[in-house]
Amino acid sequence: MTEDTPAGTGHGRTVKPLVRMRARRPDEKHRAATPLELLFDLCFVVAAGQAGARLVHALAEGDTGHGITGYLLVFFAIWWAWVNFTWFASAYDTDDVPYRLATLVQMAGVLVLAAGIPRAFDGGDYGVAVTGYVIMRVALAAQWLRAARGQSGAGRTAALRYAVGLVLVQACWVVLLLLPDGAWAWGVGPLIVAEIAVPAFAEHSRRSPWHPHHIAERYGLFTIIMLGESVAAATVAVRSALDDSAALDELLPIAAGGLVIVFAAFWIYFAVPIHEYLVSSRQAFVWGLGHYVILGSAAAIGAGIELAVEQATHHAHISTLAASSAVTVPTALFLISTWAVHSRHFKTGIAQQLVLPATALLVLAASFAGHGAVPLAALATACSVAAGLWLARPKAPVARADTG
Image (tube, rainbow, N blue to C red; front, side, top):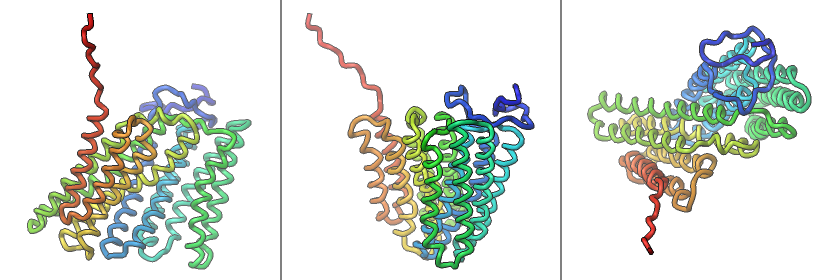
């Protein structure tokens, strides 16, 4: 391997001290997620777990508006930092020493962000959270500058646009923190729009050479991690059921229903070969943005299960309808968003197209079933999987009558 050749990312390969950062081939064979990317994802699990825990606390205290708003904002920071690194890594991963160090700095940034989430939720103090976010984004800007140095022409221009755009937006976040408290509510929306506009601006004249199969795998792995938060919540429900035999008849259906919902969500998401759809920047951009709802709702299902358990054991001061909705609403959002940006591109016929939207409506209707809401929502998602399998079954050839 020469000094200018991208370093291998497979297991057991020697890490090069320094490799010239050039664009990788989007049709590269056997491209897969690296151990460094998996470690990167695990750091983000910590932040997502913190956001989910604070959401549960806020909803349990009846502070619904504040809890949901805080969750949406904090999860955007987690998700957007993950998204930007993932697409950059798909195009420019060299796996050399500087690349690894810059990635480790981003991991440190997300841990700082996670540490600041309780302050952001409880007192509206976003200082620590924004500091962690800026650390991640500045480290990524340095990566883009390195990519610009290793290229020429349109590729160099796009990389420089990314770096400049990232630095400018991060400077605006810092300025927003220094302004009076009232400025935050007015400034956060425009800055989120500015964050999303950076990739559109940078890739206006040239698409970065991301790898479709690698991107599909990375998003799939992160979806699994978010659903894993819900598996953990169902485990907590089982443990609580064993510790509180008085509520056993209510907790076990919540735990079992939560597991079925997670299993169905997994099945539904991975039912289509999405890498075949990612053939243009426009399609990939919309698909990638849509995952804010998919991933955010996947993680929120776990928070909802925990809240339903707390309500059943009388530790949450909310109604049964509110606790049930904390599970059914994110489940319905997961179903409809997965259909809208992910799976509908592979559905044929009106029946297949209607399965997931109809299931989302049934899940929402289950909210009014009292303590049976979670099991009924689980039944609806399981039936959705069964209906999808039945509608997608191979059609038997029609035998022709012998007319001889």
